[in-house]
Length: 108
Image (cartoon, rainbow, N blue to C red; front, side):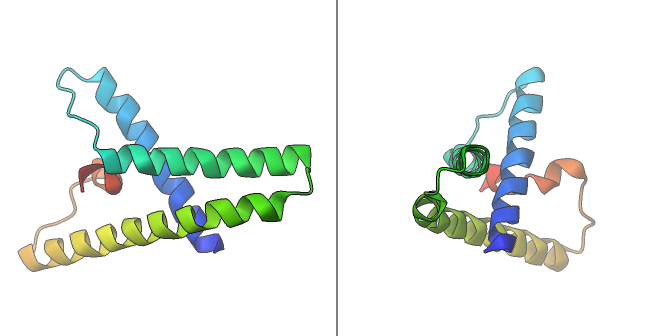
């Protein structure tokens, strides 16, 4: 579960940075629903941990039962997308492009 949480958090941060960078460029591609959903889940995850740790409400287990399924589903989608892209690149024989290719769920 820790690995899934890290995957979702890193993906959410990368997507948010990607969206901010795209907004600054002249040609702004549309942000996909998958990217917005990943950012939202990462925000909910971060908020839950922040409030649970800072406030120590004693209800952290109850909140985690609501967020853990979201984290698992998004982590599976992100890892599946990475595997699909890795296989496509290995079949085509081309090198990975660069940093912009690390934003995985934004171009599903």
